[in-house]
Image 1 (tube, rainbow over the protein chains, first blue to last red):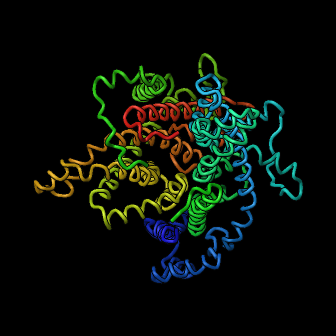
Image 2: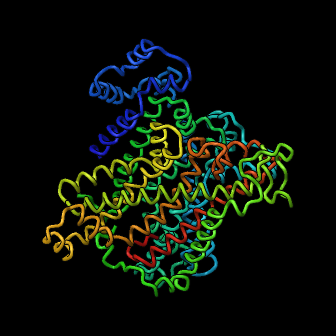
Length: 306
Length: 291
């Protein structure tokens, strides 16, 4: 994991340094104003870009270790504050979306497995394969449209923290969570279905049935609990769907979260901010995969990593 | 991923191609949609009644009707014409990105398997690093560092595809790296490049084709997402994602057709490639099957 993280840091650093021309020239060109060479040099010095590459890298890493991502080129404020301001919203949508995904995937996958090769199964499979094809931003637009047509109501734009008003908070965030969560659930549903099919053929399920246990108890207590293990892994591994979905969907709902910040940082050519966010996402992904391995081993004692 | 994936793979024969619709009706339906889309894209200038770029200020936000089957947008441009031309953008960008991404990935993956040792380790490490970036984040990072434009867009979609393909192809190539014909080629004194390109690559064609179709769906989706964010195809080029940008929410109440039809086009296109890709995988390489 550590070599991967180091590689990620180097790659992000390099990616933002292979710009045609350098950051300063691009930014001044982007503002379509005339700047003299002296001005450019001054700006380069201010950003520390005149130092040798290795020192810039060392400085950047040194800052990261102290959770100091540097300053935004656009607002001039510390990047860690920009991120902290928006983290809560994105984090909450992410949690809600995961909940939506699990609440869709587990019952649907279970139904499809129990009624394998019937219309229920086909309907669930169609629903899940469509989830991979429907762009989450379009689903978001359709949700907004539906709310508008049905109730003439739009989710509020202004973010209300959950501790201020849980109701307002959820009514605002549940829609983007639905849009992202549906796509997120697609792979998990297929996984739940195939895991259930496998588990239902296990000896212990037959034993439980043979001793006359209530069928629903066998299904949930004996089969579903074991089938949910791979679903859990998929949910973590498909974490990238969630991030990708957030980036586009926050735009649709005009939510001022990390996704919107990321897109704006690119539009504003705010390279330090883009760099910090790309790194943040990659680090979270690596850590999530690592955590999934650990939790998986804890949930399923048969798995041991050497 | 199964190390011996390619061993069970068969090259498609004429008979197998004829059997495909019977054994995989869903995949064949996907293929039919793809062919229809490709035809529509190729014949776009002959099919559409309106210039997709020409504004008509007399018919702004016109409802779907006999004159404009799917209505017009805020500039009075015909939505149907723009969707038809948008198929061109989606398919050409998607095909370019999927082909380049899968081919680069295949070469890297086969090279890693062929050389083994340090090269393989290096390839695996770099693939690991690239895979820790979500698809769209990596694509956006490329756009951020190289700026907008159709070339950058294709590159941005290509880059995240390469490690995904390299990983799959490498595992297939590991199975054939000690195959007698590879040893024979080496004994005949052929160079590394020739052995990789002429002898090993053709034998990982099955997973390669599967990756290309799978990537097509993802590439179309990614292109639409980037264009929707305003970081992909630029106005006035007709593109499905771009058509959904802004207009859809702003005119939600007055002109819902603006939001509806381009999204349907994206979903149908991606669904077709996913269905065809899944069936192709089942037909060519049952061991690669995922739930």
